[in-house]
Image (cartoon, rainbow, N blue to C red; front, side, top):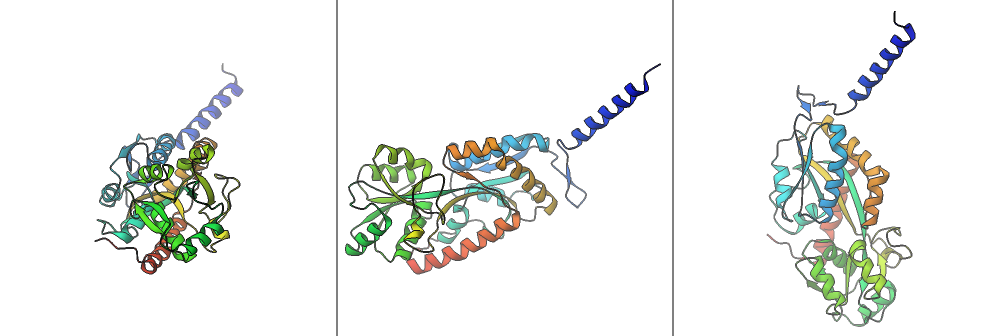
Length: 328
């Protein structure tokens, strides 16, 4: 005859296993009789090796177990293609977009096949990083104040590498010009790599670039760092002041976020928000992101949506006032 304590122990253990299993791979009701997830989940992002790809792969690795489905990263060429794919995908939670704030900045500068507010459902912010204002060592300035003074004394003579139109260096530079009241020439490049190479070579005089891309050049002395573009000083660039300490109100950051197609059911958005937040706030993801020069962040869908709308309003005014050409 079995010992009663043994039977009770087995029953308790089975109950614990059932409870634990119920939290792994559970589905979420969408409120319309369907459930999520019921198949493979796809994260669409830009080309391999970029910031979006790195963030997307961290999220994919962390989501597979709690969703109980395979989560894959679908790399597409940079530009409007990733956003176009997701904006046209079924709104059932199985297709996500991981992309930078260029998704809404680009829509202010050129015609895009989607509306960045109307056609997407924000899930969460994912990462943010400062841009660093760097100059070639031959430029005789060691602070933002000295740079502004020099630019005002030599209007139109200084230049900056602006990268591709609508990218972070371009918007950061134009905002700096407008708010500091200076006239420096924009030198466009096809991307951040060529623009940074030109600066290191002394062909242009300054630029705004990500912490990850310029830190090795700063340490080697090939470039001189003046300030960070965030509103507060950043642990990613210790010791550097902010541009805003000289130009009040200045702020320009690189953001990556997560979206679903518009009309994705709210329970699915809520579930994805909670699971992705767990991934991003975990020590492993935080450390990996910090090591490449970005900060892990998480937000509610409403906070992310509000941040997008606020930034669009701010940048729309900047574009109008600075005379950046709108492409059609």
